[in-house]
Length: 353
Ligand code: SAH
Ligand code: SF4
Image (cartoon, rainbow, N blue to C red):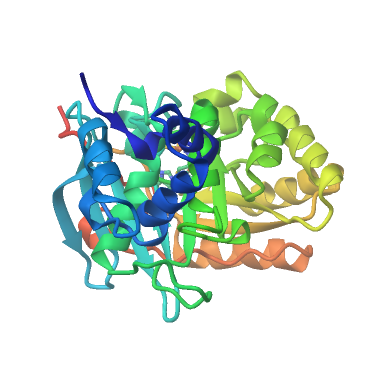
């Protein structure tokens, strides 16, 4: 009999599982705390359980971490891991440290089916969705590396934030992503606050409201263009869900939760979407849909064979200023970990063919 992997289970599922082997459900809570509060992977360390139960668990279950294939640390301390799962599939994960906090950027799929032209991940074919345990396991690997077990009880942590901005389109693996985020934000375990989790989508319009209701995390949308002509050129998904549909979904989401600003990611590509006219069109678009939003201007991170160039620094600054003057904060994202290809859009887990 193959052993069951416990990190694949939600809290409720774990409870049912433990009851199914004849144990009281409070045992499930203890096991949950060992796994997600203490970071234990060996059942024998679960010292408040009887030896008998520990042995029974070890015979029937596993608590597995994704295997670390390689890891690299950038000169700016950005940390990138190439991780491998049981079937040999691989993804990359990145930790981006700041002075008094840090974000772990997790992946949700092996490859990505969206095929955005500017994205290194998009040039790698979609292979499969990640499971719940594989998504949660990424964060646990980072916790192991920074020895942040047991979960800190205050907000001062190395690993304080999560960005679902690695490989893959999270809204195309929504069931698993929802379960994984519920585990990562559960107060009895890893306990990352939902306010500190941001999920980025390329704009799967019909799932935006549902995804945000089910996760309660922050929304980021990869917009990258002020109109359908430009957006379709660089993001094939725009042929399926047009800008208007994405904007309507965003507006619906904000009607449900007034306090929440949406972050629009806007990648600046030289000569493609970075003119003053583009900025003005972008401003009217946001105003038309009455969205409360901030921008995150992303300088393009080139990768071998991409065929795009980053906008000039002056162009980026001017673009930022125009949005700012129109009432939209538009900070320019500082690229991190470029020297180890860990920056936005540079992740890829297979060699280029
Ligand atoms: N798949 C999701 C989240 C992952 S990508 C999405 O597309 O939203 C995180 C951000 O990096 C997205 O806004 C994405 O468009 C952007 N990005 C992709 N390729 C990039 C590149 N080469 N340089 C800079 N940012 C890039
Ligand atoms: Fe997929 Fe996001 Fe890359 Fe587009 S930018 S190909 S959606 S990972």
